Length: 155
Image (tube, rainbow, N blue to C red; front, side, top):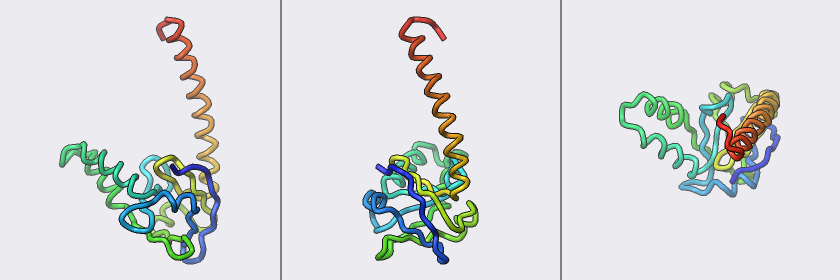
């Protein structure tokens, strides 16, 4: 499981050292990671074979020709890059992905279970603050709904 948050610096060749904790979780047909533009946020999403299999499972549930299937195939499979680790545990991020999300210097890698995201540092700080607010409010609403359910009061 990808967990924790790491700040890393891109070098002049757009190489980034992938944390050892993340490298250990990416077993698959090659020694590296897959990355593509995230569907849910303005960042890069990445992972190993487990992530790819998860997306393929969702895509294959949809009928051929379904507009959502086509959108997912284009966004995920069409935007995907396979990056192999070098001897120092680095990968070179594609220029197109770096340009799309303003990745030029410091980046943040955020573990999200079966995947991770790579953010521009300041963009992640804003995203993290918004997510924390949403999590607090959502948890309070969930607890309130649970209390009402236990007391037998309809919401």
